[in-house]
Amino acid sequence: MIILVALSTTLGVMWCSITNKTLGEVTEAEWSAATESDISCMPDTACVALTKQDLAAIVPSSCSGFRGCFSYALPGVMEGMSSSCLSNLAEVALFFVSAPQIAAIPPSAFRDIPARVIHYIPNESCKGITQPQFAEIIRTPLSCSGFKTGCANWLPSSVLHQVTPQCIRHVAKDFFYDLNPTSFRAIPVDSFDLTQEKVGFLSPNCNLLTGSHVQKFQEMGVCGGISPACIDKVNKELFPLVKYDCLGNMTNQSLSRITAEQIVNISPSVLSSVFNRLSVISVASCQALTVAQMGVIRSKGLECSLSCIECNSSIKLALHRSVPQGSEPPSESIVTFTVALLLILVLYALRLSRKRVITKSDEELPLLRSKKISVVT
Image (tube, rainbow, N blue to C red):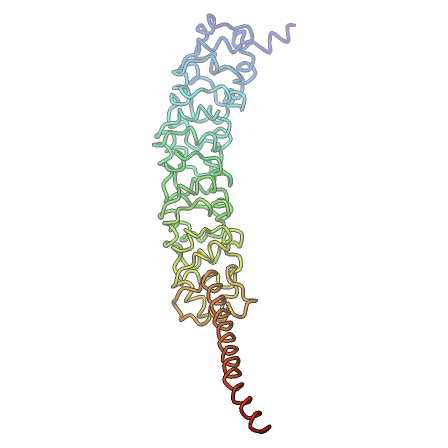
């Protein structure tokens, strides 16, 4: 028993039995001498009487002893938080930090903050992060690897607007997948410094992509990461901005999801980047190809690669190739009508021919009869 008392006592303070009333009697020297064990032994309920001066007096290494103390501490206490103390807080202590408490922490405390600390801040508490604090966090880009999507969704738009390309490089690859529209829009386009793998996780927000995003992805050479689910949502008005290499680097799966409304906005010269993969374009998109696009395709003799052209029909193919370059290819209905018209003309010609034969026979019959009579006479 004597040993236990000794372990929980520093400079005469009985840390394990301290209360919110007796905590106020602890001197600065006693706080400075408190060990990790002393802090962890202190009842959480006593922290309601903790002050910012008390917190500032605790040596950083002892800060790892905090457990549920912050669930009782007043927000103003956090004004005494130092960078070293914050960096040493355990996961369980960070779990209890509220948004008002986060907002009260001096911005300097976030300088060189470990990613681990950012990661364990409760998502909803992230709304307490201020612009000055965030500015300190992103000074060390590696700290950004601690940001979870859930946390980012609570960050004020004014804070997210500060995100840098260096910071984005360090976030998790799936960071953007569950990012809400408001947060997505708040991140500067120039900061979308993404790898192809990260671009693949943009699909839920691809309807929010702008022309600036498209240009950024082309500069980064990451169009190959655009997923089929993303293509479905990209605004058709953005496709005129797509360049040769961008379209050419897309996967077959993504190309197959390009809609009729989207494909008509692709430049014919850009479309030529996928000439060797025209077969993956859907029938609906194939049928929507423009005169100019078909002219380029036909000039290369590649119309048979299209899903909407049946090259096993010699009549259709002949009719199709007879159309001058740059003209629209004959539609299904035109081909059917043409074939039917040819058959009607053939049948009509046969009928006329047969009628002539019958008429001639009728005219020659009296003559034959008269000859037969004169011979008999």
